[in-house]
Length: 210
Image 1 (tube, rainbow, N blue to C red):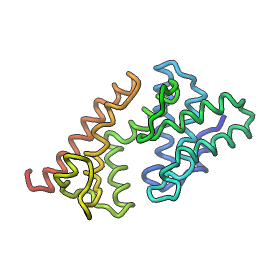
Image 2: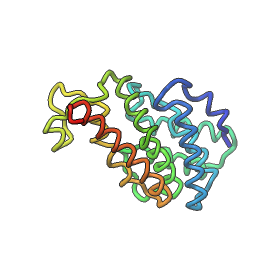
Image 3: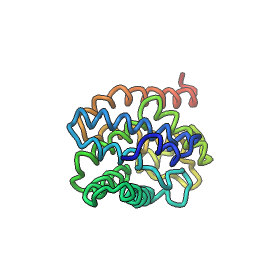
Image 4: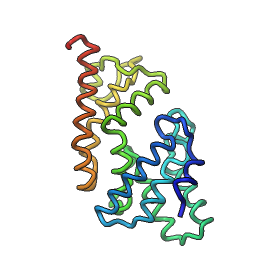
């Protein structure tokens, strides 16, 4: 079984988005959800440790398929430890299903738990910090007034930046409604409220409304 100490060497220490601290938080949250939901703890732990092991950096060449790349590397790591093929496949399913924009039909309980643990980390105070860090690293502003087109369709006008506030509108405020497990939805309620309060206050201040 891979350990947290092993995982520390697989992730950048100073990446504010997908570095080791993110992986450790997801690992701890996934453990908590697995225990509450009755999932296979070994599968969940391994998947959490390996879910972003390849290509998670914002502008990296493997960002779009980092879930597939990470699943491939997970198989190599677990095979070297002597894991049987069926359990390696179970971990790979979790990793492939964790990406927000990738739909997996009838995911296992363990895959649902990894998805929920990963998405909880984009909510609350940590979610705010990670979203702003992502925008900064991508050369985007923390706030820019969204166009009417973006508000209506989710598509930006030519030249319109994708600010941290855009990401809040486009994705983050919808996350809690995408969670699978009752345990994660309970945790999400407070984190969602904190996320909304911050970004709505940001918009109000930037627009001179408060």
